[in-house]
Length: 509
Image (cartoon, rainbow, N blue to C red; front, side, top):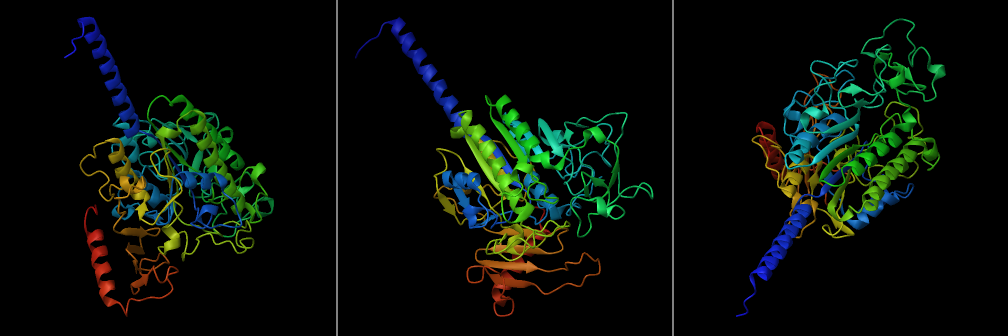
């Protein structure tokens, strides 16, 4: 046996230790990838070209799909903004809370401080975390203090940094919240937000309709800003107000700068786009990019945003250690309160693809949306997966992926679908998918090829009479046109029993 001198033994030992630390470092990098989730707003299954769109091109989204996995059964848990975002953040169905509908302008924080969220779980294992874009989960205790501290908010549920639109841009006010304060707010020009008109001469979409650059069709006829009337009323804060057309640019610039500043450690970025939500006001350089008017142009703008973030990741040499997910918060809608020619110019484009329904509906078009995951070297390229996965599951799945422990009661409706997300061969996908509309009056349940819709009225009236449950087979009838509830009573009963269990239980995992 060869005996080495003590000095050489020490050298070999040092090399071994360095190699070992290198392995640990590489393993840590593999188990703690950077995570970027880019969520569109009202983007339908058929709105991007890799899902079949012909009237609009989305080359950057398509490039991600080619580099990773495109899910054909990717879902949100709700068919409107706030419920989906609540469930995405917490891993809990929104119908388990009192806040199951779209949050109004002066809504307080919907997620209580200290609640385990996708951000706090990642932060617990060393991630830097940021949210940029649309929030729509409320701010403050009883209501937002627009001229003081907007607390609690994103920073109290796991985010280190935030630059967010408080609600959604068809609702007031048109300002951005950075940290705990309205960005650029002049204390000598206080911001006041109300659900009531301030005075008889306060300009609104009703009284000054002839001054609008974008006319309203229903509901969006209160305070005017930038030639567009909104839901709700506000005054003041002139220096803090943004121009609608600049939103996407502002959020991309903020996101890129944040990635650059945090590139040396694991980071989580949630970029919540406002495209394609109304009012659809893409930047001037995207106006006229399609023949479908501002809705089509907003798809192009969103695709550009995806490209800018992807290009940044590649430019910084982070592609092999960054998981990028592109999804939507719910399905599509054409006329959502403004006369922007979305209905007139849609042509043969099918925003929901082959599915029935859209935003606000528990038919497949309301919650089955684009869902793409890409991670160079970890997710096999050009893959298409039929396995069901939902935005509700992302917190539990990513926690498992990076080794974060779920506290008691955390993500209690979410399932660890990390294998499905990475498209591993052994992954099976979600065994059932629950979908809710705004307010959870109607709820859908998909199990395998079967789909149950529990109807409890769609008009929002408290005295709405219960309607008969419907049953569809998505394999033979993807458009949900043939109700089989009478001919397949066995399947109807099976799904009704399962839905009853989910609704009655405190958790569904």
